Length: 215
Image 1 (cartoon, rainbow, N blue to C red):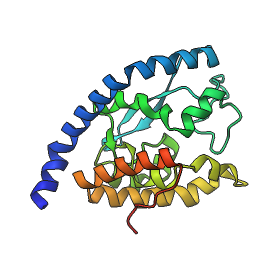
Image 2 (spheres, one colour):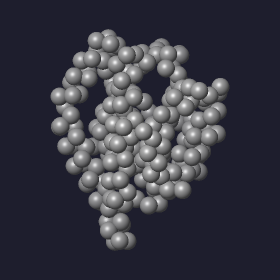
Image 3 (cartoon, rainbow, N blue to C red):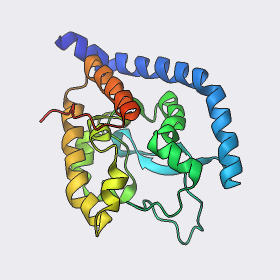
């Protein structure tokens, strides 16, 4: 088991990422074109949203998503608008609820910025708020989904109900995400990744929060 896990961590995980992301991008290409067309009609703007996040070795990279919110001027732009849905469009709401807006990040996986499974990449202000924690976590690539992604699949709704979404995220949700990310980083294996992928799909299809995270 130790040999299997070590092999997967060293090279098997990256090979799995390349094969799965490449297959997914080819299979989803027609759907991508359809989504791009809908976004162009809905937004009349660039269909992709690019944002700086931090990856393996706490190195910055540009995360790609489908655009789901109306663009704002550079002066008014914030890194996150926690719990806010004021700028989310009709198609954007659907993309975010189904997590389809995350699919372009498969290009990040293929390039090596991300993994299929791993802690979600954060923006600068949260990495700077917990530097020691992120130094521990980001000895592996961040991913499209992990234990925390499944547990907090309705994060926007949770934050929207808080009087101070920013404080609640920083003091309650982020520490729990970091705890789960550390557990995953210490126990990377093919069986764990496969379980997270399956549970992520289940949580999206059934719209239920699946608690598969270790205590």
